[in-house]
Length: 73
Image (tube, rainbow, N blue to C red; front, side, top):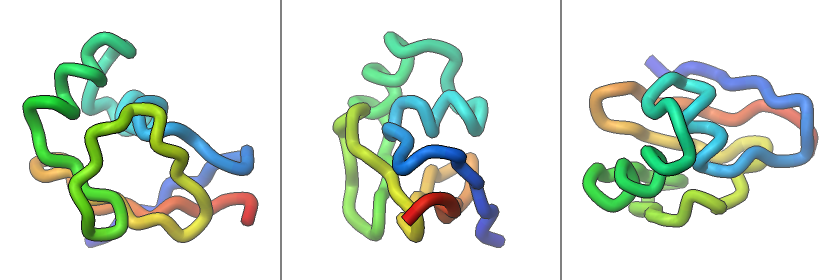
């Protein structure tokens, strides 16, 4: 099941997103997590914590679930 994540801004970074869904607790942990674990944005593996996620982006975090960003377009 895909969960919708609502944001109140134009975008959220992948690092902020991972903190929002409680996968990591800090920015330093984000860097490690993306290096060690597979995270997919729109079907492609992503390792940049600064990657901007916008309305309609689909994120899959193995072990945590699938998410779609809903917010400003």
